[in-house]
Amino acid sequence: MKNNIKYLILAIGLFLFGCEEVVDVDLNNSEPKLVIDASIKWEKGTPGNEQSIKITTTADYFNNTVPVVNGAIVKITDSNNIIFNFLEVGTTGIYKCNNFTPVLNGTYTLTVTHNGQTYTATDKLYPVPAITSIEQDLNGITGDEIELKFNFQDNGAESNYYLEEYKVPYRPFPLLGVFNDEFTNGNQMFSLLIDKDLAPAQNIKFTLHGISERYHNFMNILISISGGLSNGPFSTPPATVKGNIINQTNSANYPLGYFRLSEVDVRNYTIQ
Image (cartoon, rainbow, N blue to C red; front, top):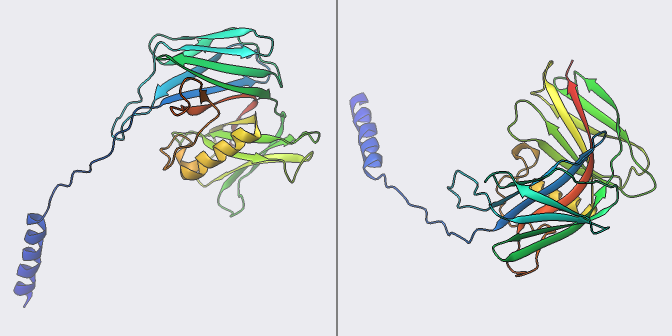
């Protein structure tokens, strides 16, 4: 009986092996879209004159590299019609400016010209409160997780929207989240990080961004459809999310990405 069972298992294995077939998945290819990553960030205590914008295109699913865009004309104009030109560094697709002048609540317009098409977007530079203190709890809520809390004072004279960004040594992408002061306007607020993989001697870089309501909603959608904080905001989403950049030449051929300006406060903290 045992021999019969052994032969039966062998026969099933040979049957499955003989029926193995390679299936080719035919993925539809689409025309590449321009991707404009134009995040202007002014860190507290710095001049803010050095800024950069990255321009790429979308690629096929199995493409292991991100195609960069060369030869674009990139500039930002402030409300006084002062133009800040962004020049490409080699052929990297990264366009840099060394004389940008940041003004809190100032209005700026981005203009990108590439392949005969012009893309524009307008936003203002949003302020952010200073981080006032950092608290650490080695036990956390569950008793076995380290908890970090970054405290700041919200401005009660206005509605505020925030982007929180954590860079931790064991993750390939920053952890991102967005929140607002709808129910805590004018109060002491905080950003909380709880992770079982946090450990003493690790350095955590926390950045608090002041952002617009529209960018808050844009990032909230991106983070949600990319699986939350664990996958980073640039994981491939199942649907297209439009930013605030408009193609003035052909509105149907809209780009991906967003133009936003933020004051940021940064803290580096080593877990004790």
